[in-house]
Amino acid sequence: MSENNVNKETDMQVNLQNNSSITNNKQEVEKKKEKKKKSKELEDEYILAYPEKAKTFKAKIENCIMLILKDVDIINEKDLIVKLIFECEAAKEYYKKTNDVGYLRIILWKMTKKGLIKRAKILGDGRRRYYFLPEKIDVIKDRIIKVPKE
Image (cartoon, rainbow, N blue to C red; front, side, top):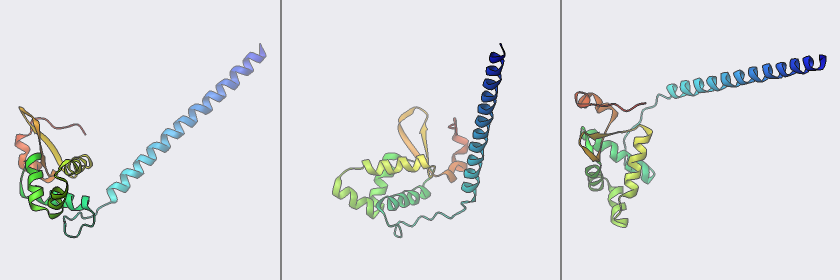
């Protein structure tokens, strides 16, 4: 009987130690998340749209997309790609070589995923996607019906 009591006590001590280590791990994870948030908040850098200064193809395309979106409030994907091919030298050369816009669309989608630009659908027009800059939300605010979850 005394052995059972000893076993129960040691089991309880082990459980208490496990629980305390789990709470310590949770606290450490929360601290790391807070540090990441603070470091992201401290990153106050200007982001410039200079396609002629960009070194890589992807950077040139992203810069051109940003410049096109600054001129319009909202534009659909097809028109944006067409305008990109006509106005951006890098996109024009790429299209001449490949006759494909798939990579340009992928760059556009990745910019949306990063949050550099926003994507929207117009009610009743489910096939087409429209793009705009986050700064233009104030311009189209009165027409927004549903906001995505963040």
